[in-house]
Amino acid sequence: MSTPTIAADVADRRAPALGGFNLTVLKLEVRRLTRNPRTVIIALVVPAAFFLLFGLNRSYDSLAVGHGNYSAFVMISLALYGAVLATTFGGAMVSMERSQGWSRQLRLTPLTPAAYIAIKVATALVLGATSVAAVYIVGAVTHKASMSTGLWIGTGLSVWVGSLLFAAFGLFIGYLLPAENVMQLIGLILGLLSFVGGLFIPVSEFAVAVQDVAKWTPLYGLNQLVHTPLLGNGVDWTWVVNVLGWLVIFSGGAMWRFRKDTARV
Amino acid sequence: MTQTATSGTGKSAENTRPLAVELAGVHKHFGHVHAVDGVDLDLRSGEIVAILGPNGAGKTSTIDIILGLSRPDAGRVKVFGLQPRQAISRGLVSAVMQTGGLLRDLTVFETAEYTASLFARSQNPREVLRTAGIADIADRRVGKCSGGEQQRLRFALALLSNPDLLVLDEPTTGMDVEGRRGFWAAIRKDAENGRTVLFATHYLEEADAYSDRILLLRHGRVVADGTSSEIKAMAAGRTVRATLPGASAAALTNVPGAETVEVRGETVLVHSNDSDATARYLLTQTSARDLEITARGIEDAFIALTGDDAGSAAVTPGAAR
Image (cartoon, rainbow over all chains, first blue to last red; front, side, top):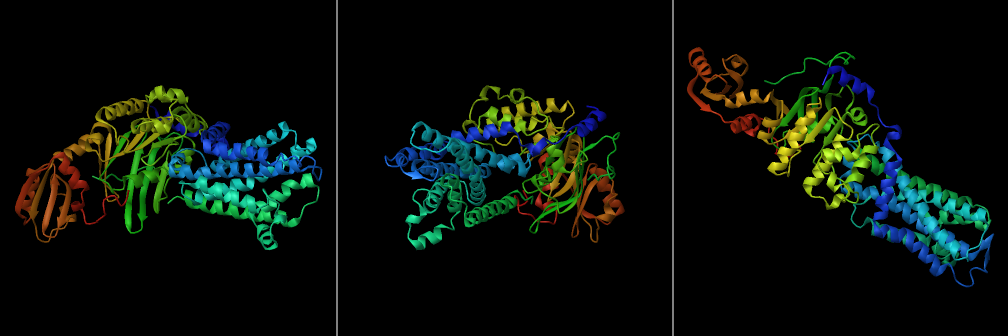
């Protein structure tokens, strides 16, 4: 060991680009997520299976809805259901990483907190895209759902991008709750939010009093927006307010808990 | 005995030998517990230094500050002339901590691959696993590895960036004698290439056998700083005890042979490396009486230097860890 070597080494070394965010980590994170059979079944298999059960009713393909048919309408709803489950799971993985002490291990590496969050969100979006694809592929091969190619792509992308809202929700839950049972709890919460948000039954079927409440829930605005291209009915500004409002709440909450978690003592 | 920083007050220029770690007047409180109470510390590149002390002495708190995991309330911290976090992000510093966890659902190799990808430059993960002796379990899930295997994996992760400073917090806890010996052989071999190693331990023998220099910590203060043989010399010394009314420690600092002087009321305790000279001085030059000379073993020295009865401050063991 000589002095110039160390001095040169100190000057020569640099921090990683993008705070440590890279595709190797993304690949490994996605692999981890798919190693949990429960995650795969709930986020990928169940929504596609729901479509087979509820989206292929004999009357649905002949029932015109906007620029397509009712089968396509149901397919979009279930793709959204799957995508929000997937992105929430992806975000909520932070809960397990905290409890296993991995977050603390990562603090001994160059990875910045912002890059870590970016990795979690990107992982959530990869699983979300897979979930949307699973439902849409089942929709395509069963030949019941009908809409233009542009609408297949447009609605699929809307669902996927919209599910980002629930990556923030997952992060919030993941930082808020302990790891035990967080996944089961998410399944329950999202089932409830999907129901009241009109993903399974249109909100217009509810009693008026229930409708008034339902319109404020986090999945209602998003569900309305992702069906807009198919329905061609224009955008109601209250849906946008709903989505943006919940985005502020979820990402603000996640940021608040995250700051508490990574604060140096 | 306590060494104070004499250099490194200016920014290290290109041509001066960089200090690996520089702490100056570092304090850290947790509530009313003074976990780190004014630590000054310079580590030169290439040293293997042990931080030795009982639980609650402030070892982990000091290490957390060096690694940027915790922020000191007061004082200056530089690692290779940089802020701790900058040094980490450039891969200059790695650590094996007791608290760091691993992901159970990744394999051993994937964990190394994951960590390696976070550095701007990294060694080949397969080779590092071989160095750590766990190449044969590369495809095993971390959750199925034994505690010893996981500790080796943590060690491998710390080597990935080829750091100039390696920090180890109680690295051999839970290892058997054989594992411990193998581990230290690997560390020593590694340090021959110029890597600075700082490790915390509460095993006296471990600090003695494997470090170039030992820092003895008690109640958040460095109470002794020297080579292993210097500490041993202290340990080999004797304690001269006498009754001396009106004694003050300051007035007794130049007692021949004295290494440390303590005054407790009318009792004077001089830890001496030349007890004859100390006793002669006390009996002839002062009004000391009831003189007693006791020999100290190495364990006694450790206890004397780090135990609660050696000072006035009281800290619950473990509270400052």
